[in-house]
Image 1 (cartoon, rainbow, N blue to C red):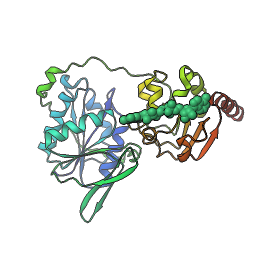
Image 2 (tube, rainbow, N blue to C red; image 1 turned 135 degrees about the vertical axis):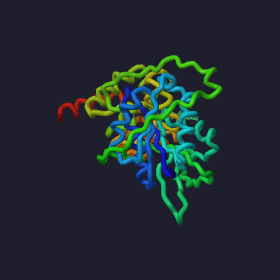
Image 3 (spheres, rainbow, N blue to C red; image 1 turned 120 degrees about the vertical axis):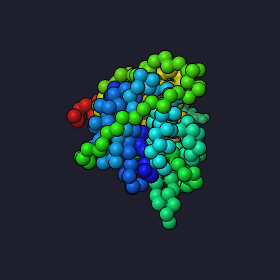
Image 4 (cartoon, helix red, strand yellow; image 1 turned 120 degrees about the horizontal axis):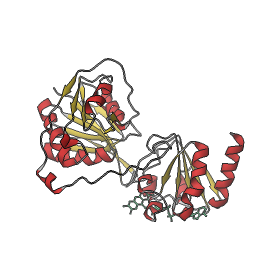
Length: 320
Ligand SMILES: Cc1cc2nc3c(=O)[nH]c(=O)nc-3n(C[C@H](O)[C@H](O)[C@H](O)COP(=O)(O)OP(=O)(O)OC[C@H]3O[C@@H](n4cnc5c(N)ncnc54)[C@H](O)[C@@H]3O)c2cc1C
């Protein structure tokens, strides 16, 4: 069957919300689509995924795919794509999708459109739009190979919701590992526990820069609490160890597009802006009136953050 195969991202036997953005892409391009759930709890996740209008859901659960190792996942996904005659494979551009998609493209001899933020059909040609030069330019790509691999930005493809119905669920087989798998050992996954919303899904993000130093959490978290926000950080803050690496926003970190983005003591380097300029309202607090962040801000406050942020928290608390 020609059509799109969406690769679900699983966690604890359930689909992560990233999966629903890839489904939204499949629905937007139209035609038939199927969903592949691969990993522990795939059969369980497949039951939930059966409500999204897919032609079928394929579940692969095998001890060999208990832990995510691309050298073990990719051959199975590639075989399912070939056997099923799919012409498009869609993942969301999360760490999982960004890891799996290029290897899949290489195995299938397929063109790859990474990190797309729009798709359109122009005169029968499907075109993918993606940011280039750290988001300073947008390019349109056309893929010439029979199979196309696409990773979609979660922020630009709002999550599809279950539309009811019950797609048939098939069991798929594990196709064996790549030769390179013998060189790779899965050690462990460390998941940072947080009560806060996920960075990629939060309506409000409060991000801090290197200037917060060791007081990163102490200053930023009360503001994030008062706004019900996720916490983000610049790369300089992460590299210096003031913030956890998974909080990094930017070209080499997460891409976010919340309703409100508050940049505290962040200079506004292009690599940072590449990850947050899609935010609906941007507020910047910086003591340097010439900081580049002010050029893209809707509201700017030129003040020492160690004075401004506690005052803002006090005011927000007084109003709640
Ligand atoms: C290939 C590549 C990829 C990169 N990817 C990323 C990325 O994904 N994300 C990212 O963020 N960066 C990325 N960078 C790094 C980027 O170029 C910047 O170095 C980084 O974003 C700077 O972080 P910063 O704004 O926290 O620090 P700085 O540039 O040091 O800026 C600190 C800011 O805080 C202000 N400030 C200082 N003290 C106070 C105070 N008391 N009150 C108020 N304001 C104050 C200063 O005026 C300044 O504007 C990348 C760089 C490269 C080369």
